[in-house]
Length: 146
Image 1 (tube, rainbow, N blue to C red):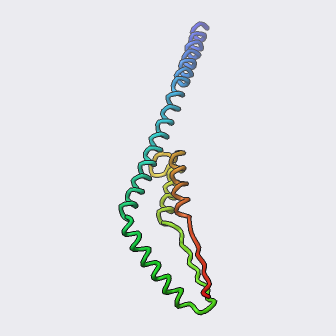
Image 2: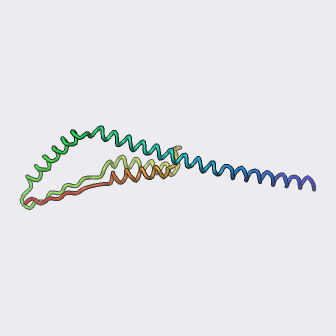
Image 3: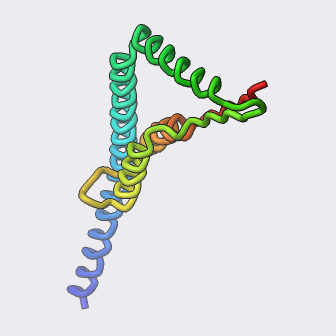
């Protein structure tokens, strides 16, 4: 009977120690998750900055003016070819839809924890929403030839 009581007491002590360890590890896990989220946010911000830098390098002001001038010339030719009361509609398409699809796929894979990728964080979601807003922006211009 004494041995059974000792075993029960030892088991209770083991369970209490285990619970204490779990309670001590909980703040560490939360801190690690916060650090992971912060690192993900920093990485996402760096990626966005790098992409913006590449775009600025590819499209300097002189190149932009040259391309806009050529575009204006072509639109002028279309407008001049219209009959009287003809309607000219110019609608821009969406942005880089291939990039958007790739980002959506990455989001899905990371949310589902596929391919061993890190989990999708709030920083990733914010960067994704900023990109999506830009990619889905479109314009429409209309003119009637008098």
